[in-house]
Length: 194
Image (cartoon, rainbow, N blue to C red; front, side, top):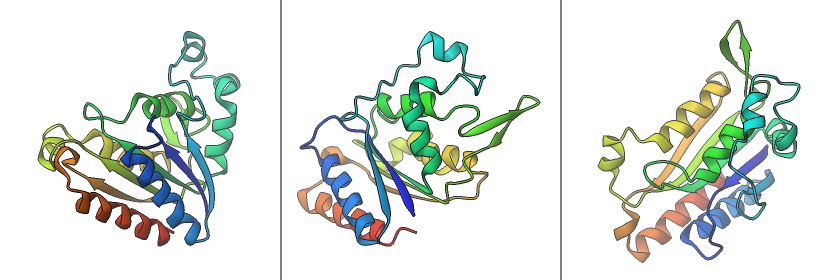
C-alpha cells in the first residue's frame, strides 16, 4: 500500500523520533510505499487563515494553499499518525493539518448540508501515540486522540478503513525497558500493517 505517515513532534532526538523511525522501518520491511510527512520538518503551518475559512465550503478554492498535502492524502491508501498527546489532544500542528487539509471535496463532500465520506481511498489507519499520564486519565477526558484516529478518520472513509491504535500511557514514569518494548511493538505492528 501507499502509506502516508503523519509525524508530529518538533524534536529530532525525542522518543517520538524513535517511534517514527520504528514505524518507517516496519512499514519498509513490509514492502509498503511510504510517503513520510514530517509536519515540523516540512514547516507545515497549522493556522487556518481568514481566507481559508471564507473559502472552506468551496471545493474549487478551499485547497489552493494546501494543494501539495491534499494530493498526498488523496494518493494514500493508508494513514499512520505518530504523535504525542499534549493537553489531552494531538499537537496543534496535527490538528491544524486536519483543519486545513481534510476539507470539503477532499475528505468529505456536502450533499444537502450532510457530510458524506470522501476518503474512500484509505483502507487502513493507525495511531502511534504517547500519553504523559495513566490510561484512566485519558478515559476520564474521553480520550480525544484515540477518537480522532479510530472514529473521526474512519468516518471520513465511510467506516470502511480498519483502524488500530498503539498507545503508551504514563510516559512520565515509563522505564527505559518499557519504552524500548513499545518501540519494538511499533516496529513489529508496522511490519505486519496491511
